[in-house]
Length: 144
Image 1 (spheres, rainbow, N blue to C red):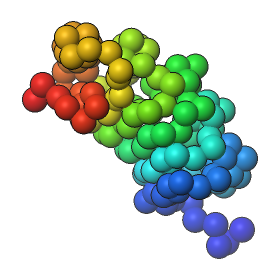
Image 2: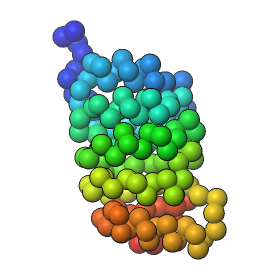
Image 3: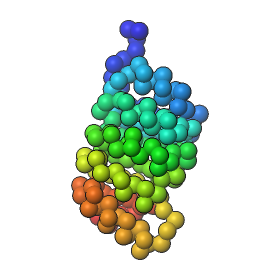
Image 4: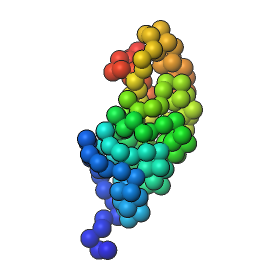
């Protein structure tokens, strides 16, 4: 057990088979992890539940992790230190993220949308009311 760190700067796993079991094993042993870059992995909402148990998470990248749904949002909302959140090409929509009221440290939120530009603009404006210090990117575009 001496070789297992109590803290990690982050974990990067892009285009991999990383799954909820891996996150369970990791988060059960390492209580502090600063960043999770988990693009195009096999994690689900259950994996996000595991991440929510970790302290000091400042970055959560879930792009292309399509098994991530709005059901994990209560767990994301507990990550109060979060500065960057990427939910592009997950199952979470612009309407869904309007509930993320606790992420007052969030500086960057990345989302995807297949809606028209006026709809996206309206949602960005609504999100700015909820998270005034956050730049909201929709399909890599923003109002800022």
